[in-house]
Structures are given as structure tokens and as C-alpha cells.
Image 1 (tube, rainbow, N blue to C red):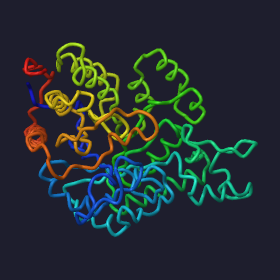
Image 2: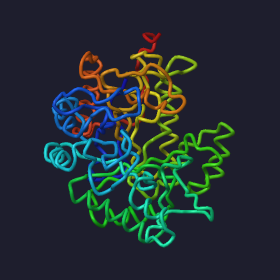
Image 3: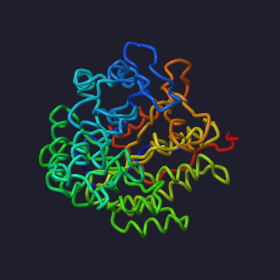
Image 4: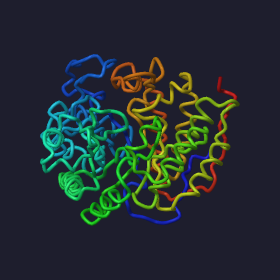
Length: 421
């Protein structure tokens, strides 16, 4: 198989074009000082993973070869995963507080970039801004949220504990942008922007403009997906043509790429859900033997529909979906094929924690808190060292190709699929 990567059609000095990202769910990665877990990771509770543990893992990550860390939300939160924000201006003490964050910034630089998961669409109901808004119609924060005549608030999809911020309100918008700029000043190199489809395009344009004026080298990576959205949830979304996208999904027409394209002219990059769909279909559980050639042909057609400077980080799995190894029925040969396809693209790869050492799950994501299946603790013992070496080699070869400028045109399919069972 040809392992050389595809060359960008436009040259750019921006660091993210050549990055190798590593995605960490902080609470489930490592507890500093090798202390025992605080809770059972099969339950939606804090288990004790923190930024001290991330710092202590930097040698491991440098050995692997990654160049950027994407951290799950670390702001003060009501939930182990971090997406239930209660204060945007601080680091949750359970993740180590500001001291641990500052230590991570110092220890990671200059060779590892730090990307924070940023959640501007909604807060947790215990956030003081919402508490004040709900308590009085006269609160300065009342218009930061959307209430109906009965006092019910708009929320993230149908999760009433997550009130949706009205980011078209000038003060709310200014606060969210100003706070993000503050984290850039503290050393953050980029943001993974949660739930792009929730806020308006107007908000995202102003957010992007403000960040780029403040720090042109800050990477803005968006999560644009309508997975799991029901008709009654559409009222909470401000993505253009939301009813059209939703109807196509009900007709079982893939909408990943179409949803992503709504934001292609705004941000630096978009997480490539279409890549994940293609690699799952053609490699994880194909109806015939896996073919990287067929998968690459579909990817080439997909990429052609995006601007040349829109980076589309490729991922095999993440915290909201079944791990690729589980989808592949635990066949590590298929995982290797998927990773080879991932790393031969011109777009930067993203490794979800544990994938590189064979972390799997016991059952599919179903029901309340089903996503815990894909959020188990990082295994620091009994790792698949051979698989780790495979990923390390992929990263090394990608870096060598970038340095030597030996880029290929079309990827070929030189994998011996006869070894697959």
C-alpha cells in the first residue's frame, strides 16, 4: 500500500495541516500520581482522571508521536464528561484546577499544541447566569436564554437540564467570545467547537472573526452533525436548511457531508463525519472484503466538494459513538486497515484515546448513558504493544512524508485482504 500522503493544493503555514491529534476524555484517561479511581467507570460519575494525569502521560504521547492534544471540556462542570458547564472562566477542581492547567501548558510546549473542547451553545441549569435568569424576568441574564410565556426554557435538544444560550443576544455573544479569547491568552492553541448546528451562522462568523483578529494561529475546528436529532429537537437548532437535512436523514440518505458543508466557509476545519461513515462501511463491517481503493474513491469525491483550505480531520471513533474496534467485531486487522486509510489522507488524523492500544467495549451504545460503553478508562496495563507500535509507525511515516515532500496522488489498495477473516 502506498503510505505517502496527499498534498494540499494550497500552501499554508498553519500548524494544523500537518498535525496528529490525540483526543482525550480527561476524566477517563489517567489520575495523577497513579491514585485509585474515585468511581466506577461503567456509571456516569467522576472517576478522577485529571490534567495532572495528562502531564504525567506526555512522555507516552511523545513516544507515540502526536503533535496536538484535544481535551474534553475542562471548565467547571456538573458532569464527568465536562459538557455541563457551570463556569467558563475556570478549570474544574476535579480536573486539577488552574494550577494543573498551567502545568500542562508549560509541559506540553513547544512541540504539543493544546486544543480545548468549547461548549458555547448551552450551560448546566446550575450555572449562575441561568439561575438568575430563571429567578426573575428582570434579570440582566433573562434575555441570554429563551423562555416561552409559561416560563419554559429552550434547551440543548430535549435535555432540560441544559438551557440553551441565546447567542444572538449582544451581551451573551460578547461574553462567550471574550471568554474564549481569554483562554487563548492563557496558552490554548485551538478550540474544538461543540454542537455547531445549535448557534446561528451569525454567531460563528463573529466568533471566527474575533478569534482570528486576536490570534491568527488559533485553530477553530467544528463539530457539525445532526446525529440523533428528532423532529421535535429542530426548534433548538439554527443550522440552515435544518428541515431539509432532517427529512433526508429520515429517508436514509447520508447527510454527514451536507451538514458539514453548511460551515465550510466559516471555520478552519470540520471533524469529518463523512470519513468516519465511509471507513465504517467499507472497512469495519463491509458486505464484501474491505477495499481501500473503493473507500478512497468515495473520499476523493467527498473532498472535492469542500474548499481546498478547509481541513477535515479524519477520525475512526469518538466519545459519542461505538469504538471502531467494536464495530469491526474486535478484528484488529480491520482496525489497522482503517488507520492506514486514515493516515494516508491529506487531512490530519485524530486518535481517540486507547484506540492505539486496542481499547474496546463490551456492548453497543444504547439507552440512557449508553455512551459510557465507549468512555471506559484508558488501560495503562496489559496494552497491545504491537498495535501501539503500528500506530507509532504510521505517525512516523506521515511525518517523514511531510518533511520530505514526497506526496502521492491517488492512494492504492496494496493491502493483502486475504488475511482478513
